[in-house]
Image 1 (tube, protein in one colour):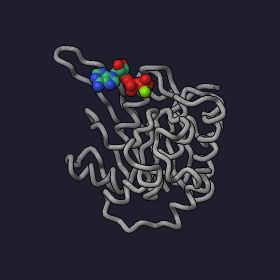
Image 2 (cartoon, protein in one colour):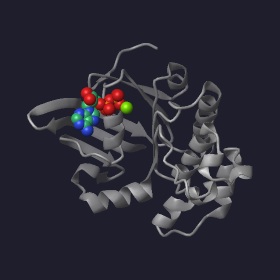
Image 3 (cartoon, protein in one colour):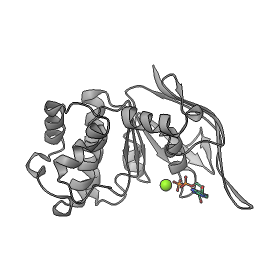
Image 4 (cartoon, rainbow, N blue to C red):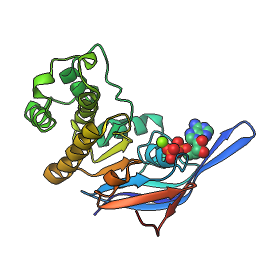
Length: 225
Ligand SMILES: Nc1ncnc2c1ncn2[C@@H]1O[C@H](COP(=O)(O)OP(=O)(O)O)[C@@H](O)[C@H]1O
Ligand SMILES: [Mg+2]
């Protein structure tokens, strides 16, 4: 079953008289429960693709189907609701709120969505991420790897249909990057989390079910890594 389906997506950034084509006629389908990586040179359109899949940016043309909803047709508040309920985001910068503890940071999406806290599930995530004994720490008292794991815990805390991660290991050393990757893979295995991760690390990319390679805003179908 496919969870996301993208048809003829084009994105052109227009700044005054300068137009930059970032994506050109992208067609892509993502199967539920799969781990996907997106690779490609800097400027090839990876972040733009992820942002469009997550409803953070709208395409200039094309369809972006999340289950049966075309994100390109939604208004800002409808998009915000989809992001809050259906999607999890992890970025290269962790974006934890410094004045809240790790545990409080993880609960933010649950509160924003006015959901009951599923503390058993949160505790399970904390265990899996090896963060249980850090839950009362503030972000400033955590290592980079711990902060990124916390950001992932926050993103998956609402059991998103789709987890989107833009270079989540980009700011981490090899060991922490490996831990983050292991975590994302275990979420796939244990809770069937569908994930799309941008990375420039081919060793990490190779561990995916599928590698999507972008070049100049287009998907390359034939490549080897
Ligand atoms: N907000 C923006 N305004 C104008 N051009 C942009 C903007 N965001 C990205 N671009 C351009 O779109 C292209 C793709 O960028 P991006 O998706 O960030 O690539 P990547 O993540 O692969 O490095 C690049 O040429 C970039 O300069
Ligand atoms: Mg990028």
